[in-house]
Amino acid sequence: MAAPRCVIDLAALTRQKFVDDGVSSHSADEQENVEASVEQKFNIFHQWAEKEPEEFKWPPLNKEKHLRYLHKGLHHLPESYECLDASRPWICYWILHSLYLLGEKIPEEEASRVTQFIGKCQCPDGGFAGSPGQQAHLAPTYAAVLTLCTLGTEEAYKSINRETLQSFLGSMRTTSGAFTMHRGGEVDVRGAYCAVVAARLTNVYKPEMFEGTAEWIASCQSYEGGFAGQSGMEAHGGYTFCSIAALVLLGHERLCDTQALLRWLAQRQMRFEGGFQGRTNKLVDGCYSFWQAGAFPVVHSVLSKQDTSLDCTSWMFNEEALQEYILICCQNLNGGLVDKPGKPRDYYHTCYCLSGLSLSQHYLNEHHSCNYVMGGPENELQVIHPIFNIGLDSAKDAVAYFSRLPVPNIR
Image 1 (cartoon, rainbow, N blue to C red):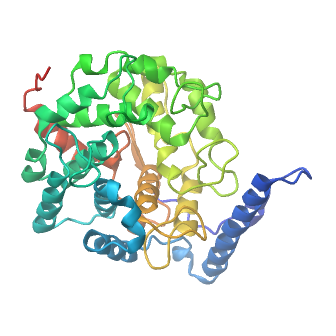
Image 2 (cartoon, rainbow, N blue to C red):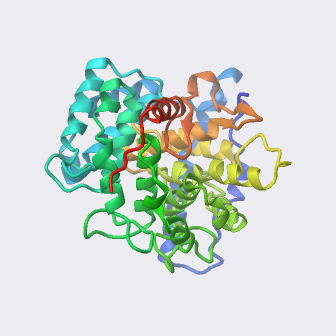
Image 3 (cartoon, rainbow, N blue to C red):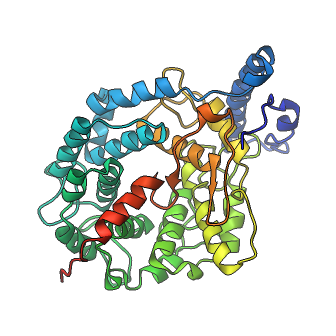
């Protein structure tokens, strides 16, 4: 189903702007500045749309420019990426996943080249490092597994040493059930999510590897309803997604207060901008188009199990408003997507803005399947698996491939 082909109602939107009640503060000033930059984008689009024929009154997704930007990143990165030397599997994932979403096929030679590089990041004792020769870490391990599953070739699948991966994942678990990000590293819910995703996708999962993990994650749900990185801290969009997704993968979603979580998630969509903030009283950020919006399909699956009469044909957020924010405010004129107007483009925000756009375009469950694509078919992206954030087909293919292999039994 295509979205209504209409110009944004600026008068209605203006009524949703922030009101400081006469109390000035730094955070209030920042919010007003962001709203001003977003309003400028909306006004420019509105003026453009008024001059266009009725059938073209929508913001286009500049696919060709985004593709050029992404392909360039696979071969050459600017000096500004030097600080991400310990995140190189992440860069591969951000770019390849974005290319997948845009419907771009990766040539076999290119896929092999990326697979061989990721292989150099695989550590002898298991897991993947952020760069060749560095220490194994759960975050790049997650990114490496997603990259290889996105490529989906026999070479990519076989490059994963499942025995040592299982050993590494198990060694990161603490006595409380939490996971350290690396040996001697920090503990937060990201570790549990990264570990269970890698284990589930590659079929190295064993229940004893995650003993107590679900209970530990549940302890991180805050009084607000979202999840913190650790118990007693502030709820955060990234940690919240990791927590509810991990609980579902562990089969213990019942430990989550889903009503409180849903209330907190719904409150994070910004009334004027249409995008999501990551925490209470923070600014809109394009990356939370996935980290916050991506939690809604997961919560919906949980609620569907609790209430079989639940009948819904869309996710429980404003998909149209999110698509407007991404398409009008987050596209760089030269390709790539951004956090918010005025910010530079990067591969991270390109990946998660496109992931959020895909989620907001497609509603899928076992009873319903419908599309809500603002701008019509030319703006439509590929469908993603909301828990793994790789292509739905890529996730199915990887699970099917590894499920044919026996689960390693490394002690």
